[in-house]
Image 1 (spheres, rainbow, N blue to C red):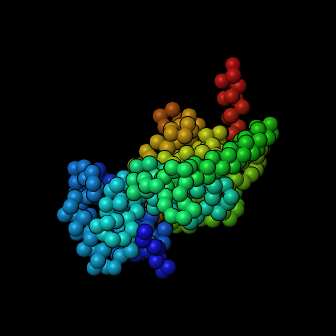
Image 2: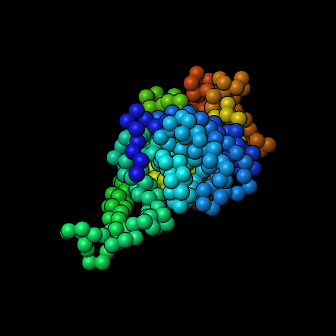
Image 3: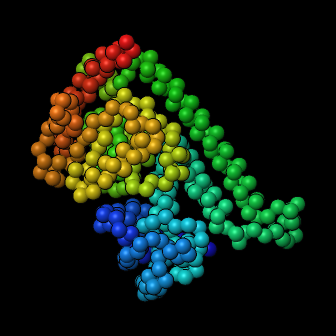
Length: 371
């Protein structure tokens, strides 16, 4: 095994072009992910392929080129902006003689670094173990041997079977603990429902400015930073709109190719989104990839069953784009989007007014639905 350097990883990034239109944006994203993980980028290896190589993901020539970069820069890590199979990862580590990490593993590592609450840590550990389970099944054939040595000869159990059994036990413990969190959240939601409290969830691509907007709307000081996945733990605050109360929740950001193990592990947190009365879909209007990011967020919302929740799109960071603050309406005069700057506060009061108007219309809408 390869140890992580005490001073932090020095990495070669690998980003291959398989003909998608978002190649430049994906390269910038993996740079920012590496930076968020505390990884120093030494060089970037790029190339074009029609499809991944079954054994090495990249072709033999490109792998040789990356190996030269690793040697020239004394890199401790090769970071692929793609998901690798266990066999590909093992083969590449043998070629490069250093650790190889794929995109999903990098995101899991960032989540592990950022989790602060007890619930967040449970969710991240569960996601990591379930990701590791795929490696146990598919990639750890070198462990399919009988244990040997004094005191280690079990009744025919292989090392792989032991690892799989211990991992399964820990996964069950974590799922039981998260189930208790789920029951607690259900109790809290029932209490809010009895009080007829209107709930709003902020959703969006990572680093779209959700936490900054949350702080503006609620006059609080939740952690906000210009980095990917600054927020992992859901934070909720109660605000008064003048006529009633609203609970606003800041949630974890989404990202392209978010590992499914993370989506599943964060189901308790994301349930706040599913049960919300309204979603504020925060968009980084200054990002050239904003349309792709909107589509990715909507895809994850559909995956967790939140696509039926009413949604207002909030185009944030207009201070970086020159867009004027205001409200966009569709052909039926319904609100389609709001243009704001959470950093400067432009149009925040208009957004507050929209929440009040939307909340006031809810009892009427629910009454019509019941009829």
